Length: 49
Ligand code: SF4
Image (cartoon, rainbow, N blue to C red; front, side, top):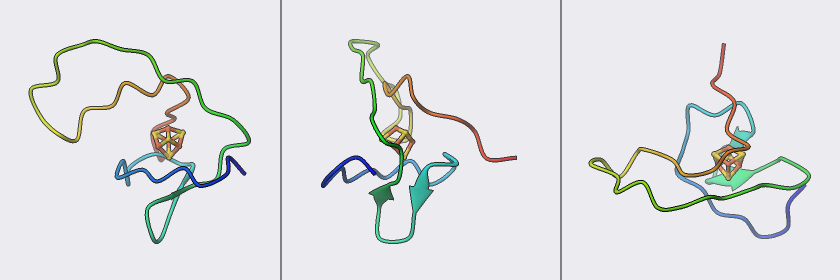
């Protein structure tokens, strides 16, 4: 698990209760000028089925 990664992207399959990321590592890219706080710049994101 990535250590101490807090994430609010609860529709990601790596997301866990308490805003925890369970991916072994993540890759965050920027800048995409998010128009919504729920948009993610984490390229490790995988949508939940
Ligand atoms: S992989 Fe990225 S988007 Fe998914 S829970 Fe971890 S930090 Fe959040």
